[in-house]
Image 1 (cartoon, rainbow, N blue to C red):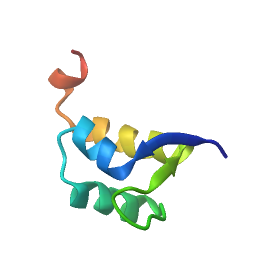
Image 2: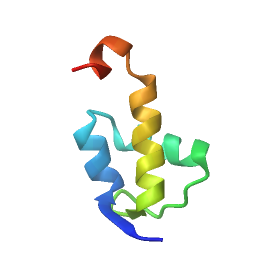
Image 3: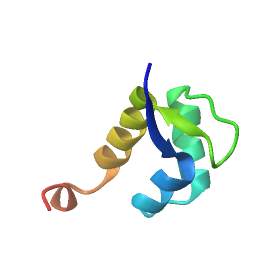
Image 4: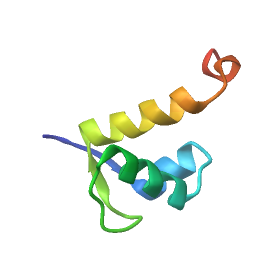
Length: 63
């Protein structure tokens, strides 16, 4: 499995979330992490981002 070169902190910043919110998503999805600087596997990063985007109102997804 490849790495996305994205840390939890970077995903949080990119999508205007707190690190704790991303930790919660990791927990929900069963994704292991150590801390905010954990670099995620490509599939894990995609799963988190997909989950974030699915939770946004549809009008924002079309932008």
